[in-house]
Length: 218
Image (cartoon, rainbow, N blue to C red; front, side, top):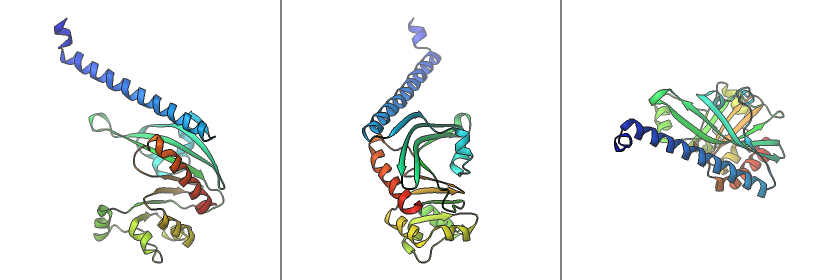
């Protein structure tokens, strides 16, 4: 019997089983905690996220990346701009030993009343500044130097991006730094970080999303 338990294959299988069990437990616990949070805030909660085909059809870049995509833990929030879907989303990049899974907490909004161009907005970093120095340019808003310093804005149609980022919208982003936003015709997705938000950070995120929907899209 000792020989069985000391077998490397047996040990690896045991470790893998424990790891999978822990992953499933923490996903179950997160769903339970988010359901309780939504109920306490009077919001609708669904353990499943939006349909993947629906997400892909938005044209937003994040929903076209990777494989093994999964959306879960949907909380629906009403705002002046309409329904906002807030949910966890993950996908896998690469295959085999070189693969990695990326997970986010996203706020997806439809925006039929505003002309949304294809764009990506994210915090400016030293790496991006170095890239700009060697020729990888982004879109600057000369009237809003803080915006241009703190955010990296890109898109295939620069004039359409300039038209969308009105003074009111640019000023809002200067007051709310550190956000990540992607746009495509009819839709916008916003997130705070390249990771899932802890459950206790959702209430603040929900309020920030409602303010964004009302003041930027409303």
